[in-house]
Length: 408
Length: 61
Image (cartoon, rainbow over all chains, first blue to last red; front, top):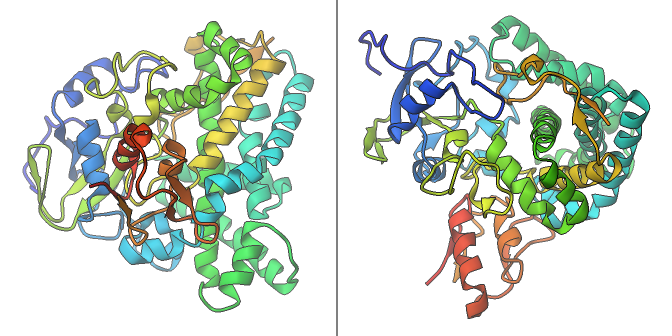
């Protein structure tokens, strides 16, 4: 990468917050970045990277085998310097692996999250939604939608699927949030990751010490992969960590933002109740419009590749900006409008390429059931706060609301 | 048309897009072709599945 001073380069992540939770970026910043398909940006470490902002180029980049997800490769775009020793801690983190090493671990999970299996657990989702609705009703009005409904629902579901006791939710939720915060100092981040790894490791050890025929994912992977020697215990711990964090923070933030948006579109909210058959396309439009992974997906080129009209050199960092690709006017008419009747299925909110979200059938089902049942049980749901007072997670890898006071 | 199970990453987009043509294997969650010669009625959905496949594992023609 060039060492010349590049003070005029746009900063990434952006310095100025967006004007509203639904504007992806500060208006001026967006104009500047969306002007070209590929733009050079400056990272907080002082390094530069290419920011890729349009739908075709983001797809090309994320599906291309010459872009690596391994953050220990030289040139990988980092938001803060890596600690010296991360090798031992990265076992099982297949989100950061490439090629066969990635597929080996991912494929141990694909059957777990496939559409048919998620249909099988739909009664569990319904049951958990009912509990969350009852908790919300008991807590208010008014009540905080985020802590009473949006976070407990996916948290309980992923705990049930993994075989992690939900009673420990305060512990893992607080540490997950730290891990996703881009501004947390590295020592705190490592400490939180270490605590979570130790927690999951002791859970796995306890399950191994008392083998049973429990039907949760960790028990199954222990029986079918760890005991036969196919999978290391630390690898399983790393996979569990990834699934636990990804399994609740993403859906929770989607739920909070979805409710904020739908309370501004009462007709659309009522439609969830009256035409639940339209809910799947509403969920896709919410995923597109809200695009909560707003920092983008980070890769490093392993060979020279042309993306858009730019030659990306081997060793250069690249950021696929899913959120702007999801507002690409060449793909979506009126991209800044929220329109559940359009064909939103082309959105890239779950990423693209071999790393595309493995839990998307689960996320879609949770969002659909939760929003439909919410519209049935709370038809008059309203936000009980001035929109300007809502605090957004601008420094999180997963964008969302800290709290959302609602009334009914 | 053909599917490449070596490339497939099991995201399930094809099953969501054209369930009459694609399925997921019970044991590994990877793509299965239910209908290797889908009719004209499925053409648009199959093309969409090709475009949406994150792994580029579906080929037509």
